[in-house]
Image (cartoon, rainbow, N blue to C red; front, side, top):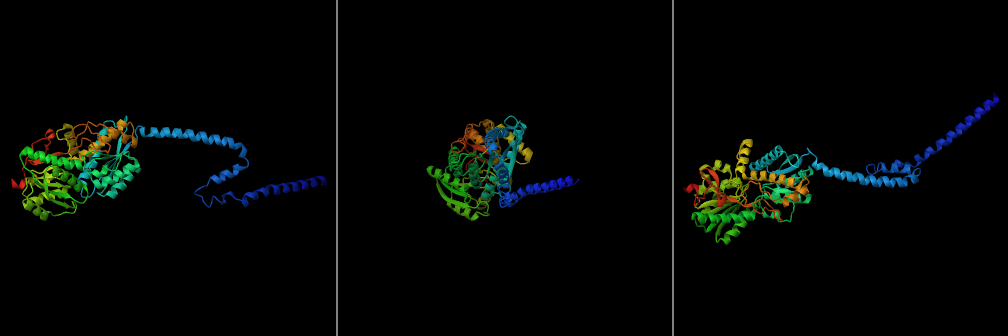
Length: 472
């Protein structure tokens, strides 16, 4: 028993000694803790250093070669698969193609802006109901309010592109459109300009912006040529012109310059030019009286709706003695609201402007559908917005893709025949993005309605000149 006790004591001492040896290594990690550095920069490398330390000594040799192969091959194969999935994803059935629209939905120009917004939505609804594009994909509309501000328009363009818009349609104002076009070019997303006239927008070497309407030069030059042709057809004689125009936004002045250059070539003298703020002007009787004293044959007007209506009313007030008031890219005298607002005063007013093709039965059906849905007559700006959306849809089909770059390439080479505009031939774009066949038509208020009167191949009635409502 004594021997057993001695053995037991010896075993106990041995166990205590071994336990002391096992406890000793546990102090090393405590003296040099791995988390010391990661905790200083936890956001940058929280997992890298702890993962490396345990593998340095025990697994150094065995993991050298296996670590190289798994990290190379898996990195390549998943990348290829991910690329294929990314390429297939836009074509996935049921995933919508996003289209962004930017127009003035509030402010002085909201009347046109809201109509244009509605027209795009109407076009999208029709396309979707007909089966969509690319074998069944649907369009979805992202609506945006520029508020009439170039800065807001730019910000909204950036937002819409970030949200995934594959194309943009905009903007009704040249200043807003210029900013949006710069963003579209930078982000490589196609922009179709439904309405915005300034030449400078497409003089920047852009490749992602396309304009559906005639530009300022075409509007001014054709406006002068059509006026001369109407004078010859009616036996009127034109020698002198007075010009009232929007002098603050760049739109009115760009059209005036083109008209004035052509007028000089036609031998006309511009006896006075009156520039004004279209959103701030409240009275032009002083200027109208001065112009009346110069006895011009024609008064030409370029501006927006409210200022154009003001010109008409002030002209009647001073008894302006002219052969006609002739709008060039004027946002008043071809708008049905003008006939309602001005009443009998509206009779005889001309406007050379972009327009829907009144001789096209399909165009009239579209306008009838719009009026049924929205309770008001469809303005030409809304027709251009509608056509812009249909053009984008045709480009998506032609591209076979909803990728913005592919859509841009398709638009640049498109020959779009099924349009509702009074252009001679299909819509095609030149290198600058201008519609090659874009041209205005001349309209005149006759018998309380607006009719196309020039050129003869699209005319619904013959023009009347001289013709001024307050002189009848």
